[in-house]
Image 1 (tube, rainbow, N blue to C red):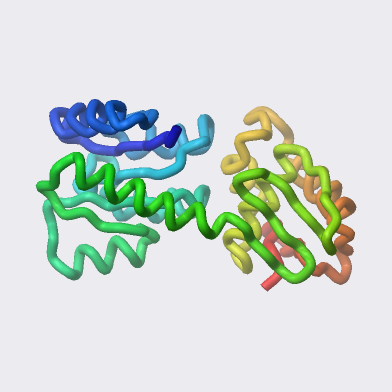
Image 2: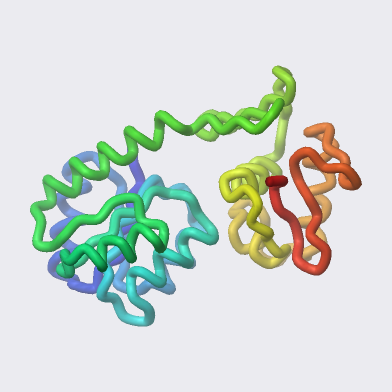
Length: 222
């Protein structure tokens, strides 16, 4: 069952979409608050896709999309009454995967969700040199051998490799990794990274996979 996040401040539209998606067999969580949506992604996780309206309180959907991209790689559909090409381009530049102009029928949204998730599911195996990650099955192979990772180690590795070359601070990793308790010490990130390197056969001094960035944190090697 797909778990969908909807961020829509038109409450009548929001209820219509929630009811229709649930009738289509999807689990749905909806809010009119961008900040609540960000908290849900950080704390609850497990979303397969998000539908974001552009005109929102607190921050617009474009800014929300950009912030979501820093902590999650789930597919994002932008929804807006503004159907001009510049709005669409801005949406894609901020990290959206699809753009749906209002007003649309809920059946079209369901079709877009199914099509987008089908495309994404075909690309859930990530390879980098001798390292391969099966995202759906949460399995990792190095040089053909299976490597057993803890949930936190897997989430850290998956996040870093999905955003290869982008440095993440300990604070950012702590917020993004749902398997780490919020009250944990920031140093627990160092412990998870150290254990992850050992399991991957990586060397902190001459890293193949995870590189320490002095004064910032960590990134996956370019």
